[in-house]
Length: 371
Image (cartoon, rainbow, N blue to C red; front, top):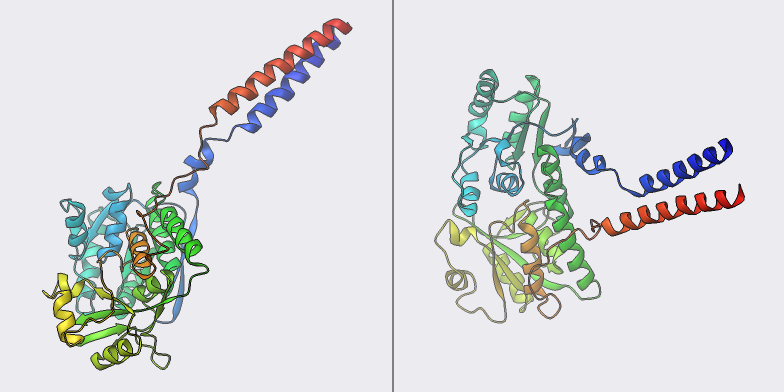
């Protein structure tokens, strides 16, 4: 009889082990945000590696895109301060800014920015282990980073020019990790990029140009090393603005625009929305001013503010730019990622449990018949 009990206990333990091993541990997902990670970036040709043991409690961001990305997460309360460019992001989201306002990132504001952050630390509202996200303005960013590093700030990161769309995805993913966000916005960006790549893998590239306007420099076109060019490349475009003998991100040369578009009469023109949004221009004015009033066969698409930025909304821009370039291949609404791997496995677990009961019962019947 004792032998029977031992065998029954062994069978029960074995089945229990199989059931438990088949059920995923809940802590695997809940603890994911607590894992450490590194953020690497290059500033003025110097590489930096910033280590995070986990999410921060507060973040200060500079620039529209970084602020918009924070707002897209479920951690907007961690946004301690932002510059005035973030107000555009607040307006687009229909939100009222509750975060503190900090000076814009520029060379003339370096000391003001540094003193503002130090005052926040002294008041106990911000810590030297919280995150400061710098964008654009490399000289000013380097100066702010250096001053904060000298004071012991541990999590200062920089996002500047990006030559590949995958860099934008990485930026969004890292900001989510800094905040401890569970939104996984970057996954939707990866999904849309994958859909575009799959659809266009056998499709010839279409000539395209990104056109930019500056009141001080006039008309320019995207060359290399910019978000706009990375978007064109990812959307199946051939950037006719690429100039191998120039390292300039934007080449300000109106006659160069006319010449390149003349050599590619069906090239798609992506016109930066800043010309319309900030300077009161229009597509018609662009045609009159640059194309001498004749649009010809050029399709002109206004590149929206969020498209040409490192934020989750850039994925929507990628899809729409790919549609403009290849309307016969890329069509329909912007795809939305769904986690197909997170299916409800309740029925599976119930089945395993039932099988376990049957196994134990079978073992009992067998043992009683034998002994």
